[in-house]
Length: 551
Image (tube, rainbow, N blue to C red; front, top):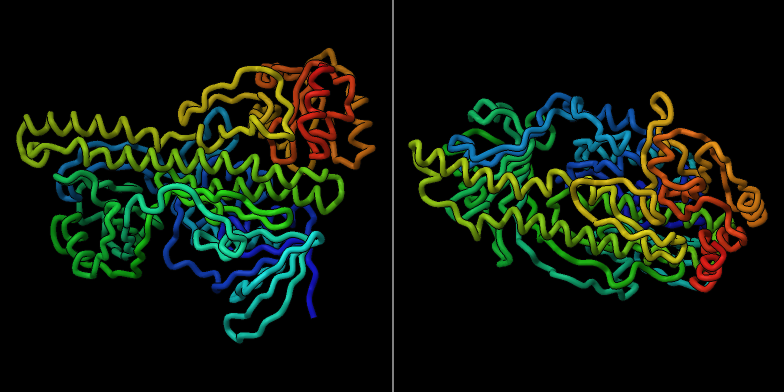
């Protein structure tokens, strides 16, 4: 006996859980299978990025994230040292997550909530709708795709019992060793080994009292051979992650190496408990394809990047949001036949972009191996103090590309998407910092406060939104009629806020369910039906060109 579900999700990490939650939030039932029991021994991510937090705002789970157990007052400083009881070369100070302000371009800010704290939040979100069935200790065995759907064979990893699940669509969010990607025969392009790294989770209750550097989120250790180690405060209390950064040459660090590294970092022996060890490889890889007509891959299954920058999970959450609204449109019938194919067209370039930026961040951190510190850095005296300041200032300046990267998190655009209608304006530069908002079609719709605690971003999510800006109030009858005739959900929001008018720059702005601008102009097009057909994936570039001739 086989069960039938609209969407089968393979993989229960943060991206799979976010997709399950997104679908449930949209009224679409799904089943998620995860081969493990869902517990996390080594959190792979620490940072919930600012764009992901905007999605959490949309989903109504902000309080859950704010209430995560990572201390609100724990400083988030990045500290560059020769050793914890050695010299401080510099630091980038950041307040605790409870005190860091939101930037002017967003109603949210990043949050320090590691994966072992964030995954339970996403699981709670996925379960909240009652439409997502989460099945742990359940693995994918095989699958086949037909023009009408997907048939998957799954196995209970505890009992060995097998069954079949039929689905209209399947999403592989099953990580870097993705079974879905492998069985689809999708290759990955890029560098398979940037560095071989060893992560060590250890517990030390009095860690901060053992050195004079104070509390900080990440300590980066620079020796005569450059950066060689980092230590991160995983839970802001007694749990830490040491990473022996390594090189492209494979090294299998044993227990003696690990204990020697901890001794070198502290400058002496100290008491700690090793909780777990994980050896892994930093990749620079993007899948050659993001799926087929009915099967898609997302998250680490689609892109593998260095964690320098914290882009990995956050890029995957963006995949889930893009795929989620398109699956809803396809299942509910208002999406056109080309809509789902735009998932790859939009998200793969973002994957390539973010993977490359993560590698650039790694190169910046490891640039100390090219500009090696001189011996004076590690000696006493005023001349050494000056040398340390010079070297620390140089290193701090290049590392700010990673610490201040809202442009990477929020500035990705779908400039060449077939369901985005360009307005002919020049593309702004794609910078990691500063991030400058734009309402150019393809970009994230700008945040503007339009009331007490209310953002323009709060208008977006459920369906398409047509903003009517200014006092002239151009007609929207044609667009509304065309959307209604095609079953496309559309809400019109008229307001004359001057800041919103300045940010969006046009009288009419059509925003997609994922919060990206699809079209803007000062008046309706002559063929509003062609506009709606373009943005819902009914037509291709030919209809776009026709619409363009009518502007």
